Length: 492
Image 1 (cartoon, helix red, strand yellow):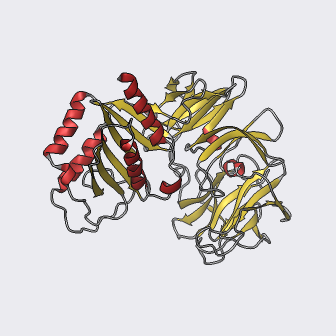
Image 2 (cartoon, helix red, strand yellow):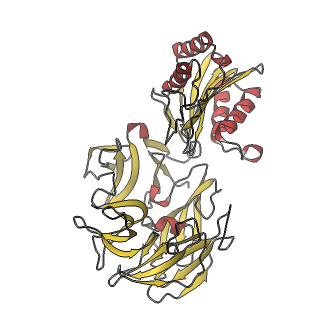
Image 3 (spheres, helix red, strand yellow):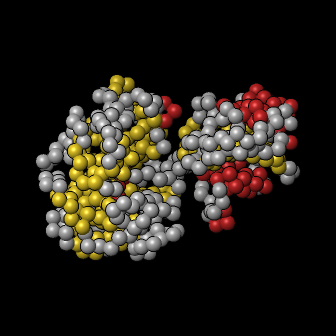
């Protein structure tokens, strides 16, 4: 009997962590979760009863929570999205309390809860049994529940028993407060896989190799500085190193920044200074600015700018710019700027809906630029991605082909070099070039010939190149994803 239950639970784990393709791919998260639950409970080895709290929102929900009941054993399974799941057994008392409370309050008979709130998070209570009975209670931002970003309350007509909906949501969510095992089904079979640090103990924000040590940045709360801990074989060091403020704005006075452009010059005539795009506070002037640690921002050029890339030496930048007096809802071009004298030069490539500098390619001594038409309501640019190598000094350019996706990560963070010239470790993942990609691959990237050699691929887990550190001598891979720190090895 125990073997049968274990087999059933193993099926459930695979079923709920694999992406649905085909008929359910287009469904919204709550609808897709419902479809999964119906498929599972109809199976001969499925559970006898399911309680669930499903969610979705304008800016994301809080994942999906399922209680699977088989032969009086109840397993709480949380799908936290992006390949992360958690599980634990409910105690008999917890299961009895859930059943008693929902029965006493006739939850299965509740009408939907909707007081006209916009955005935030929508929930659905879902209860099904093997005989075919199914009950659903939709709840639009019930009182006291997590509402996510920017829920807007219009003051519509109140729903009777409104506190009951909030209590239902709270009780289902409270089940997840107890410690749970963190599971990554796409990585569980990797040799040496372990969750070294779970985000419930402090969210991992980054990993960094410095002075011969691999470090992890841990964020305990939004308003506390990031702590850096040395990564040991199976844990983080107890003692933290220098603390780094979370906010990237606090060392720049006198500006309002939308983070459309934000970079610091490590070398060159502007070494230690910061380039950003936005409005200066005292006069609301929109432009491209340079700031030091304590001085007021210096205007480089007025206008709307985004996505700057600096050349080797720091004298030239290439940056996206809208037409005069326009925002980003029209096709834009790019310009070259010589920073020492603030001269601005147009680049003779036609505007496009998506037209941005991507990265400085050291192997080619050129800036990579990207052009493409919007796939929904495009106005200008090629239908498929188009790439050019641009000389920031002369303005000459050439169209190029090959694998360019790793450069989007390289434009934000330095890629980890391998032992070979012009080659880096990189991750291929969903991006502006292919937003529907459902897997991430780790491999070697030849930045001169634009070739990517995949070595490992993980379905339904998305992460960027800076989330991975490869220790080549030991064949160990460290990864931070979803706020967790993971460790595994390359297969033989």
